[in-house]
Length: 352
Image (spheres, rainbow, N blue to C red):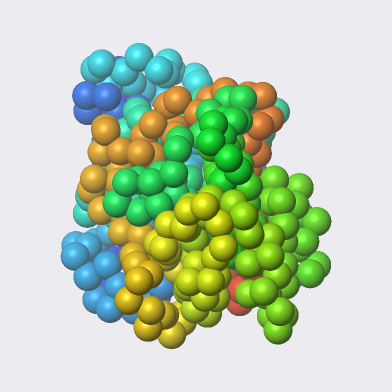
């Protein structure tokens, strides 16, 4: 690229500063195995507005001024040394790595973001940037919790979906209508697992359409018995916890499971809850540090080996639907406010 384009960002200049400050940002040329993406749409996550509100109480290691944002979709404008998967002009969906590695230059909330080659996938023309931008942090969180051997350690997803070789296997994923839940369900199904999930009744059909075998009302008095009956006789590969109170629910299901095998492990993606007092069950919060975005990461394998074909063939779809708040970096703060009001079976997005 002969002349670097002018870049702008939505900066968090210091702890608890509101609103974000829109201003110039350095254009960061790609390093080895990096691409630069001109962002077409950005997804909003609770970690973004929570960091602004809580300051040092969340991600206290981040240094200011900082560019938040994890979900990007756009067009490749420059490729670095050693990049083999992408060319200038390619449409991509990608996870920005800034908060995992404390490097503000890799933040999503700017016009141009440097992206690690293995944290991006080609985007079919049939999927808009806005719809694609619902995915990236959910892919990172779901992949890490489901497939990393430090967590549930499930088999990796394949195209076509993996067929279990030794009896039916199940995993329980709560909060199926959430962004992470929607992603985790599809990944687990493609990895060859029966998925049992929870949601509000209004979202039952949506969650089943993603591939869940059974969906139960998380507020029901019989939800534990319902889930237990659904997984009885199956190899139970553990629980993936999304939403308040889910750890206690999953711990009870795992403790009373009747089947050939039980992995008494809960990967905790988020939500408030009292946890479990059962010493036989391990609960582990999904940490997304530097290793989670490294070249040998599980998420890197999902981005490189699974998503390109899965997106192209429609085996994996960006879900839930995007709700676009507006256009421009200036709309990100407004989008924070919309997201803070709570969302169900939708994702808040800003176009650029």
